Length: 332
Ligand code: PBG
Image 1 (cartoon, protein in one colour):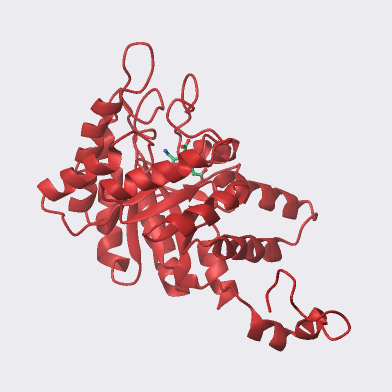
Image 2 (cartoon, helix red, strand yellow; image 1 turned 180 degrees about the vertical axis):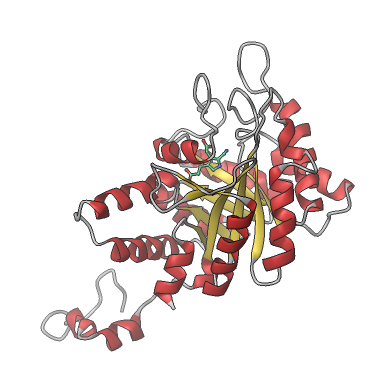
């Protein structure tokens, strides 16, 4: 008896029998979203005294160190599994010096979070340079404007060590440079952080759905776009290759990003990957649902739970979502 056809036919087969009432539906549900599967991305900005609202992401803010700590405690109390921290420095330069400054905003905030909620959830640091470079690209440039891959690797290794030193429990490289996982692994090991895992943004597409994030993290490229390093939405095989390369370089977990328009990729990566798979419900996905809900065109809470369920159904163990705290409370 399989779904492909040897099943009994109507009237013996009546799939609706199992849909009669919430208790039965709950009993036979194949997929569950648990609060501990959720990871909350957060932004912390240097030099502000009040949180700053992000207009394209209603309900989300750029945090002060204090408001970040408060929101992290709320996430921990709701049972959220992890945090993903992004920093916005007061000063940017060509090489993104703020990213590995031991006194930089991310390192300061990581120290706060590791001390206060580090036992309750997993404090992760996004590892990229686009929020720190004056040109908004994910690494230093070569003449001609392309990101210099191998020079960027040296920077990433240094950033990883600074983040681990500040208390990051996991570092998550998102810049899509070739060899970044190997370089970061070596950098961490050299600095004595052999136990710090790497969550590799392995299959990251050049996506329109990052639009609101670029306001949130103030990391929009000042010229050009990221298609020189992020993947083409047309490609599947390339994603599987990126995942295999990252795993071979030492990735402990891999991520697919964005999620909703790439659930086929999530499913294929989940099937092929020997390590846990995360998926990122990105800023544009958040903004679409918030905007439609605000107009009364969609039931916001149902849409949140339904989309998170679709990620888990596709095979992601962890889902990064800006709704993590609220969803964790809804799901309890
Ligand atoms: C930085 C980075 C981006 C996101 C996460 N890390 C932006 C980008 O690549 O342009 C997007 C997250 C989101 O849209 O929610 N490399």
